[in-house]
Structure formats: C-alpha cells, structure tokens
Length: 136
Image 1 (tube, rainbow, N blue to C red):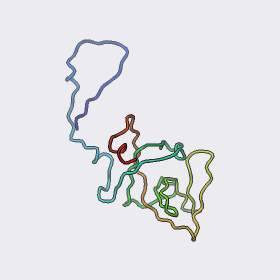
Image 2 (tube, rainbow, N blue to C red):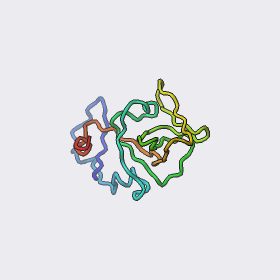
Image 3 (tube, helix red, strand yellow):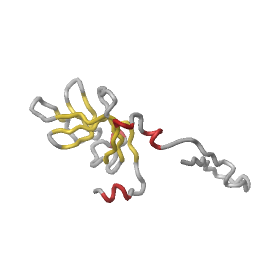
Image 4 (tube, rainbow, N blue to C red):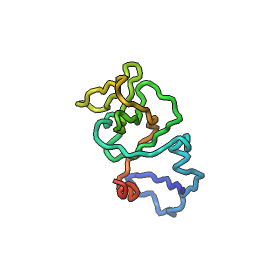
C-alpha cells in the first residue's frame, strides 16, 4: 500500500513536484487493523444504538475473539439467536446501548447467550463497498 501524505493550507507556496512528499511505507491494512488474524472476523453494524461510541449504521466492525472481555467493552454477542453489538456490563450481566432511548438488556440464565468477540475497530465507508452491497 502506498502512503501519500498531504497537507491542506490556505496559501500557495510554489510549484513543487507532486512526488516530492511521496513515501512508500511497508504497511498493510491487515497489519494495522487486525491483531489476531486467525481469531478475527468482520461484520456490519445495523441501527443507531451505538452512535454514542462512534459506531454508525453501515460501519464495518472488526471483531476479535481472542481478546479477554473487560467491563464496558464494545462486543458482538448472540442473544437468543440475534447478533447484537452493545457495551457489556459484566458486573450486572446486561448489554447497554451507547445512545439514549434504548433500555439496558439484562441477560438471564434462561437466555441463550454467547459472546462472539470484542469490537476492536470500526470503519466508516464513505462509498459503499461492492463486497457489502452484494451481500445485503
């Protein structure tokens, strides 16, 4: 992947070659975004309940199954057959939304609950990727 730094300024300082600031760094998005490749999967956020932590409808979620869950981590879980992305309150056994207007969901012993992983990154696509458009 090529990295091209650019700096926005209000003035014009000359006519340097566009290649002057061109750098090629040994960087891959996989290395930057994925800590545990064999334990990581990608999902799409749906809904508005996590906007308070910067996750918006249509964002790409990078979910790591290798990480130990901590209180108030953003997680993906399967609750009674439905995948949800929420903050986890480990002390009170509940799932919390990060936007107002959503009630906490208490997880009881009668619920089918599996923790699918911790959301480590979210990515906002400003143009829809064809990969996701084909699968919706």
